[in-house]
Image (cartoon, rainbow, N blue to C red):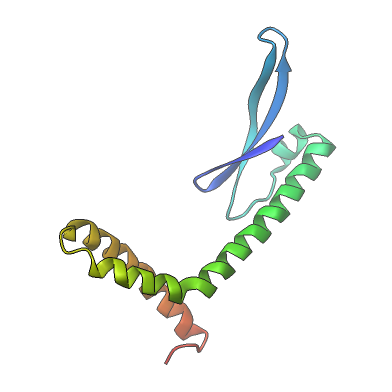
Length: 123
């Protein structure tokens, strides 16, 4: 079994050998939302015990990886912002792209400021 992340869901994919074509065939057994990755009873019934263990292991690993990505992002944010500052300073000829990036950046910066204020980390 392997797992495919597609936007906000994870697909559980079972590989089975197809003797007619003499190779493996991927079959999507089901999917669960990444925000709340709980297996519904109908999907749980389709999985073998080994596949259930594989899913739980994948879920634990995915969760830990996501936490590490968040930590890395927080720890390197100041450096990334300094790099972004230098990039924006060079964008005299490409104002349209710079504006699109700036718009997205400002939305996310405002959300981050709200979190920092809520946790007493910003005046």
